[in-house]
Length: 332
Image 1 (cartoon, one colour):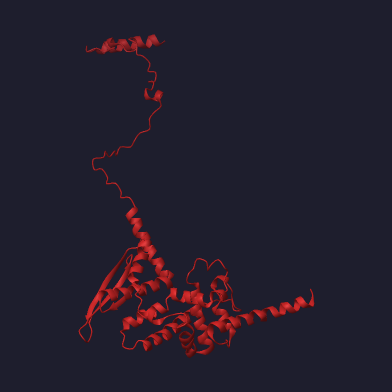
Image 2 (tube, helix red, strand yellow; image 1 turned 90 degrees about the horizontal axis):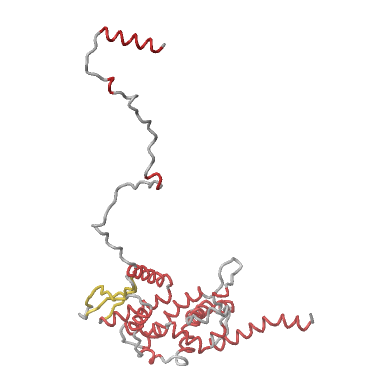
């Protein structure tokens, strides 16, 4: 191998890392202090990489952290921007800003998807991979530079440049309709169960509803109207469907049991007039054995069975002696 090739091989990792630094600066507006956080944030679980201790090395843990930080940061931005607005409006606005669809579009517009390291086949059918990577990126920012840097990143690098906050806030998203569409498409039974109805300090009614999917308890929601409460319950349930595969499995298992019972044919009712034969069936004999031949019985001739020997006449003593003597002489 030529010396130039060896030098190029040594320079290659440094060149790639330099390219990553430049790409991240274009997205973040600052250079990372610890590049390892960002490398992990861009590492999808499909590559199945492990660290020195044998534990999975991917962006799932950073995604969890970034999700919590993003909720807090965006919640503060919305709270500060819309003074006097009710909790339901603020929650709804924040939910739309941090939804997987919004974050996925953000990641795509910012070029984050091009930096994502994956096996290639897993991202083609998963529309939330880039949104998850965005959350992981926020987690990396938090570990690298702290909460204020996350807040500044979203305010200066996202809002105004990629998202119109007011347009998002006042755009009505019908979560109930989306959940109903999902349930109908998957033939899942859905209903809203009203839990309670209360009144606040001003006497205004507050409704509380819970989503039920195939009898499995979904999320709850409350609001100043039944529609608002059902919207909140639907939104939370949709989020849970996206984040908890176990919840989805439980719903479809319940659906399978229900459809199995519906499709299973009923047993025929026994006929009470049906003949019940309690007799033990005997083995049939062969045709020859059905009319068995009787054993040969010697025929009795008149000589062997002479009725003249039987007489009702009483014999005298002399006659009996005479007959005995005659028989004795005959045997000789």
